[in-house]
Image 1 (cartoon, chains in turn purple, cyan):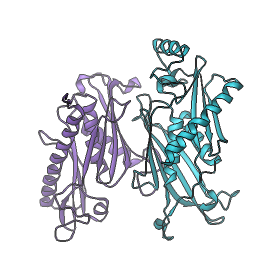
Image 2: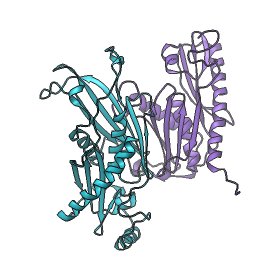
Image 3: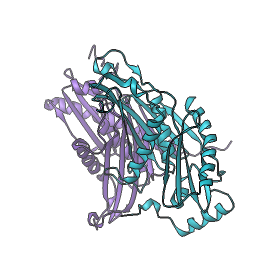
Image 4: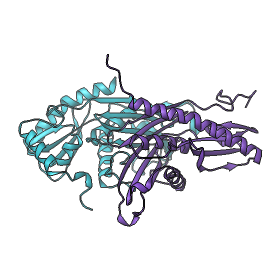
Length: 233
Length: 261
């Protein structure tokens, strides 16, 4: 941080550039490609379809099963394929966050599967993944009471900042990723590590919600672009 | 579960494809010797030492190259090593499941690996840092994102494209400046399937689902054969195989041009 400007030239409350495209895969029922700073994410949604094996079925509602996966070449040192403890945790909290907005009671015994593939990683992959997953679910026509969106805030050099880069994440004092249902601004996911005073926490939360609102607009635009009708000349 | 779900196909579709085949037609209107449009994008990822996204029709594969330093194999102390893995993750098809690689993914990775290894595409001798002690190990990871048939050619092409502009990350290990990965001329893989005695190149998913036999051949720059994989339980006659290899020569030349663009 120098004169209120961050190492990558952003202001404290500025997001990295974000690009969202809906409906990019052929086989998936819904899909989304998202670039967020140096993150490149492909997400897909499948379902509702019969949950298999049968013993995992819930007779009262659909289960939501998100799988967050980093591809081996998405990070500095090659990651062994397959889930590690970190991916399993992120998959779990992502599933729970998405389940919070999906009308699961409409689809007893079904599963709604969400795949999040991190192709290139640069801090904030879980937020980018949830944001992409939400667009994929909407693209698949899964009924939801809101379009979830995620963003992180944190603290670097004693300043509360929005949307940390990997250097800021490593050198910084705190990271607070959240996901919200933007219409009600209810919290769907919150994790935090580092050190924040209660006042800093309030500031970071407010900043993260502000970030979510901005990203939410981009999600909606991406979906509108997918479905807009072309005027006939 | 012996038969993966993807191989199950309705009788209506099977009959329809069989009827078309008798007239020498394919379900998507292609000629027997026609590939779907091929699109190659190179070096699109930052963390990979080399990367490529290849689309053949609706099939989409991402390949990434990572390089690490390790010990050479005892029988080749002055050569580097390579390793190829393929993932068929559930994002790519409603039939794919997460979990460790299944036989399909292992076969796919090994066929791609053979084409690259046997054509000498990576100059292994130049991957030696200290004979017997330290060599570069090149990891090629193939990640299927959208599955609409012909993963063999899509993965092979993606691997070749990713290796083409890959670097060896000397800087990361404080050994001086990064260098380009030493590569020669890539192998080109061509895959055919046979159903109802109709042999077509670049099978779509519909065609793969009813295919009785599959044939993949990897050709080098001169048109010499560097790897072959015959798959599935159906058979080919010797004439059919000679014919397939002749047809592959023509496709390989065209695909090689695309890769060199």
